[in-house]
Image (tube, rainbow, N blue to C red; front, side, top):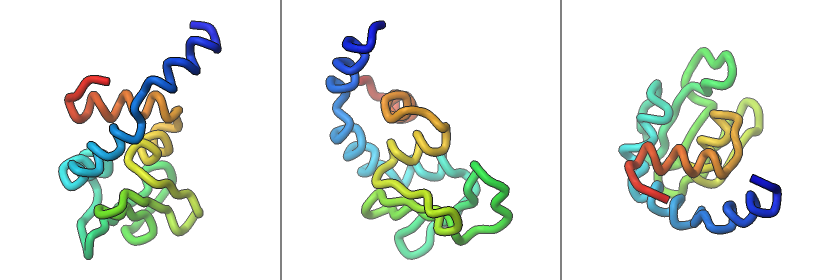
Length: 107
């Protein structure tokens, strides 16, 4: 696929809709994406699987807003798509596709 068709494909992906749908299902999705965590006060607190994170506390996903951050490294994002892209070190496009597969929906 050439670069022009690739950018057209990205524009056709409804990122906002996918993120909103995922956010509405986040209490079921986040434990799948970050299995070694706990829910506390509306946040999913987990270890960061991208680094040698030995204890819970600095890596959090807000279950109400979709904001997430690793307070030890400064990495952060605003939705589940960006979380998956960060964890997989992939593009937003690939993360959106993976998220739709996890949710069982089609893009």
